[in-house]
Length: 89
View 1 (tube, one colour):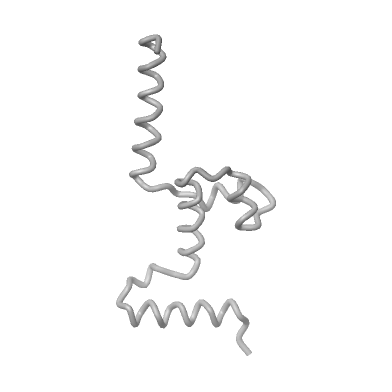
View 2 (cartoon, one colour):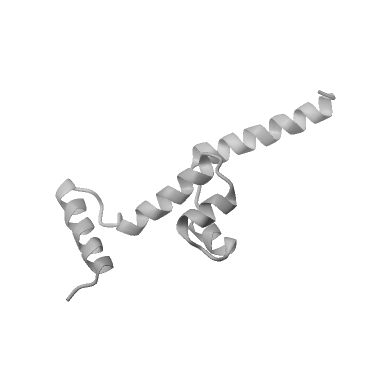
């Protein structure tokens, strides 16, 4: 008898294939996407860690990969703050 996780992975693969999506997309990809979105939307690291049930923050950090838009926004905000500090604002 198959376990629940195995069944879910197989069923997800069937639905993915029916939808014509790439094989690289696996059920675990949804977990990565969820964590990334929480980070990008500004939720605290502790909240994200609790959501995915990790004991250690370092484990959660492995799952986080933020998109280019988020990286660019963070960089632009940092540069703006740096420029404002130099201008005395």
